[in-house]
Amino acid sequence: MDENKKEHHLHIVLTTQQYQLLCCQAKECRLTKRAYLARLIGGRPVKARPTKEIKELRTEIHHIGNNINQIARSVNAGIAKPEDAKRGLYLLDQVYELMFRIANK
Image 1: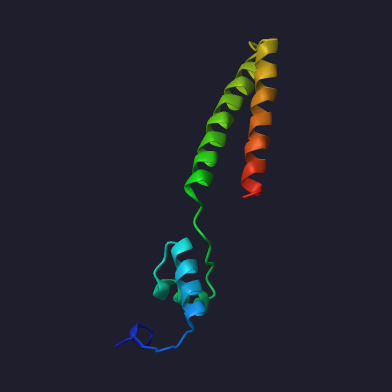
Image 2: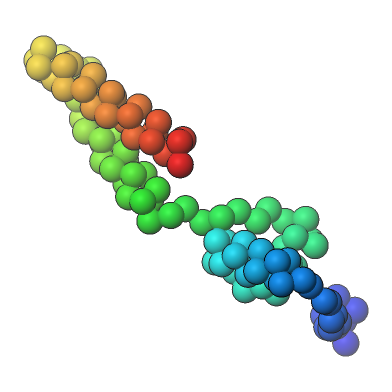
C-alpha cells in the first residue's frame, strides 16, 4: 500500500469550548470537522463561505456592471445620450454603496 494512502487515526480531547469552536468554524466553511482539521494541518486555506446576503449583493453588483458595460459600449459607438452618462454615474454610485455594505459585514 502506498505510504501516502495509509490512514492514521488520532484521538484528541477537547474542552467543550474548543469543541464548540471547532464545530462552528467547520460549519462556517461548510466542511466536516475532519476536513476542516485536515486543511489546517496541511496548511491549506480555510475560509468561511460567503453568506446568502453577500452572494445576493455580488449578483446585484454583477448586474449593475453589465448595465454599465452597455452604457460604455454606446458611448464608444458614439450613440450615447447625456442621460446615459448620468445613468452610468448613478449605477457606479450604487456599486460603491453595495461594496461599502459588503466591506462592513
